[in-house]
Length: 64
Image (cartoon, rainbow, N blue to C red; front, side, top):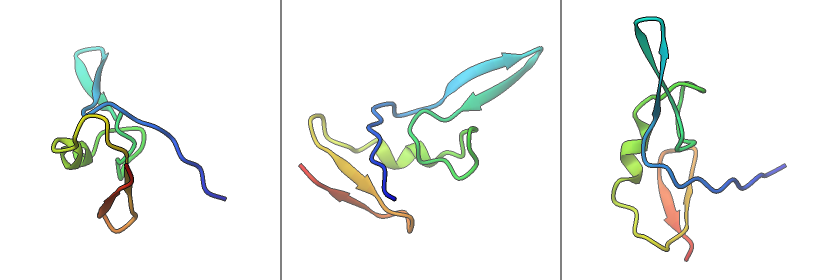
C-alpha cells in the first residue's frame, strides 16, 4: 500500500522535557521517527507551489 501525506514544514518543533530539548520531525523525512534527524535540510530549496516526492534513496522528483 502507498500513502501520500502532504507536509509543508521545513524544520522540527522543539519540545521541552524538563531542562532537556527534544526536536520532533515535522517534514516527514526523518530516519529516526518521531525525532528530527536533520533530513529537513533537503527541503530548504523547494519552490513555493511545487509538489515533490522523496524517494527512499534520498532523491526527490518534482511533480508539479
